[in-house]
Amino acid sequence: MTPESGHTVLITNGTGKTGRRLGERLDRLGVPVRLGSRNGATTFDWGDRRTWKAALDGASAAYVTYVPDLAATGATTVIEAFTDAALAAGTRRLVLLSGRGEEEAQECEKIVAGSGADWTVLRCSWFAQNFDEGYLLDPILAGEVALPAGDVGEPFVDLDDVAEVAAAVLTGDGHLGEVYELTGPGLLTFSEAVDVIARTAGIPIVYRRISPAEFTAALDPETPADIVELLSYLFTTVLDGRNAHLGDGVQRALGRQPRDFAAYAHAAAATGVWTAGGTR
Image (cartoon, rainbow, N blue to C red; front, side, top):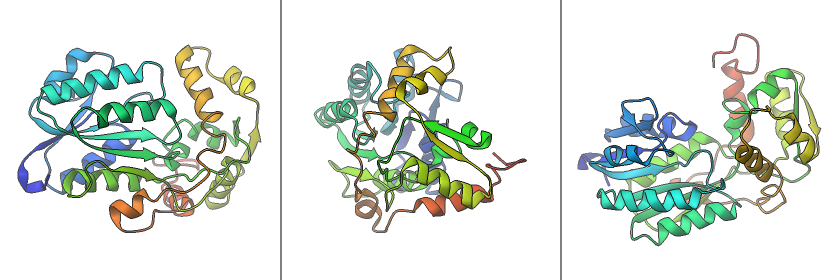
């Protein structure tokens, strides 16, 4: 697919961390983009299949980001139904955002790969931007990050790299049938990552390792049970060492090294997000 083809790309979560970045890149390349969201111009809701047909109509490609996560209960059923709906609508090019080391996510990958679609999988490590755009921002601002994550290294990936790979996959050749493991260029424990942020932003932050039981007990009592289960899974099973190695997806897709965590931290700190009066 090329920008000149005039085809439309549906981004199923167009306001999400990767979807927003990808939409901006495709727009700059002149690729027509349809940003799916519950309340936007293109209505798309994973929980309401009635919204899928109109969102897919006329789209030749889709960037598929399942919320809350492909490891969530029932994700395989939803991904299978969406893949069928996409092919029925003529949307043959599917790029699936997946999770590294998640057995359930790999089952979703198999569904897409076996569907007959033109597919590519972006299998990602933990997002660096979770520290400034996600659920770890409030603990950073409070000066204490308490998680059930110990001394296992994680190759945090910069979301700008993920979006750049997605844009390359959707506009270039040679990516069909590829599984790109997207990671950063080095391993950091969560404690080490927090230390990098503290030094870069010039603020005191303490990392405290807690038990899984303490972690779930500290969550908002209104958090749905399936989300509690998902978070526990991500911070324990997925961090059991299975992902403590580097992938080469950024290098293969873009021909360059991925951005490191220190560069991410410097860029985020420059916005003021981790200090009083931040811009985000």
